[in-house]
Amino acid sequence: MESKKEFFLECYKLGIIKFGRFTLKSGIESPFYVDLRPLASDPKILKSLANYLLEMLPLDNFDLICGVPYAALPMATAMSLESYIPLIIKRKEAKEYGTKKLIEGIYQKGQNCLLVEDVITSGKSLVETIAEIENEDLKVSDIVVVLDREQGGKQLLEKKGFSVHTLFTISEVCDMLKEERLLDGEEISRIQDFLAGNEVKFQEKKRHTYEQKLALTEHAVSKKLLETALEKKSNLIASADVITTAELHQLAEKVGPHIVALKTHIDIITDFDFDKTIIPLRDIAEKHNFLIMEDRKFADIGSTQELQYSYGIYKISSWADLITSQVIGGYQSMDFFLNSGIVAILSMSSKGTLTDQHYFEEALKIAETHPGVIGGVSQKKIPESLLLFTPGVNLKTGGDGKGQIYNTPEKVFKTLHTDFMIVGRGIYKSDDQEKAALEYKIAGWNAYLESLQ
Image (cartoon, rainbow, N blue to C red):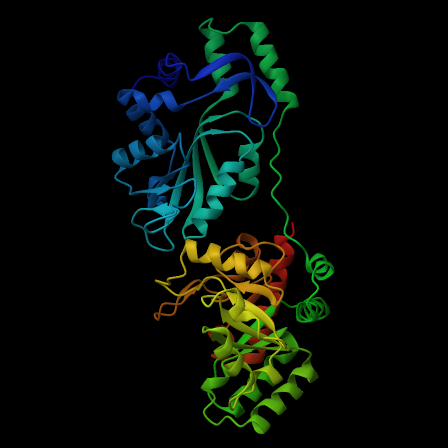
């Protein structure tokens, strides 16, 4: 294989770097402009490039390769062909038809994906791409880049814990071109001065604190939930998937000091009696200062939901602080939940769920505009104007064999900016429910504090 310098000079002949005065997308005037897309037009160079990039990497670490759209896509494809590591394709935006996927290809949750980028400047496109790939429950640990403009992006990503492998830096490129008398000293000085004073800092949008959300919200239930979180230093909602009144009350007593809400499925209680089940439960909630969230997942027309909410043996409207509702019935279907804060089901954590990107986007429009909705259940980020409730949280990753996919507290608070995590089996199936609730409370609060950094 030719030397690295010889290879670069072959690439340079294709006009991938120009020197002069160029206004970048950021508005900054740069003394050089990099465009590596011409490399895809030379099959020999593209193949050599793929091998140079692969040589830098611990290939046993990766199950998949993905290129950042668009310039890196042919590079990633060539690397896949040379290494036999499967390729997945990341779209700039999801299709509005067909499967509406953002990530195309065959992959399994939990696999490690190598990211390929052509040029790194601030690192913004990579941070965004990583978040979208991790949202598919894939892992990213390493990034390989053809050219580092040395403007802060590599350092940003390494600070976040990613390994960034670069084939060339702009300083190396200038040195090689100077040796070949293709770049004079004055131009190099201008480039050095530019790099010294133009680190491009990408500022990630900070999540809102509970205090900030409390100041912005107008819904009484939302206020109460946030105030409880701050008072108890907890963001834990325990799921009470038990089937008897005795089990429900026992669980509520044990976990009550550590939770902000208890999530019930009241229709699974086999010995339900309003006076014996609900009234004592409300007393326990008041004693330990937590809210009750009935996970009814209403999914009908408004008039039917009104009857289900207020009547029948459960009389949910008389005791539930929060209720969950699908939004499949449309905006007006949620007009009748007058006594409770509505948590809209925007996406689900089960394997094979039909709540795809299109559904998520349409459901989110309703959630953002309906005054009764305080937040949403989602496996994706949602606007800061809503509270995000994330189910399927466990201190151990994996699944339950029944389609439930688990996430850790660290992941949901850092990646999704979750506000409240919902824990089920990790607590109610524990041999020591009180101890488990305390462990989750501490883990969730620490993960929230870390996500503010």
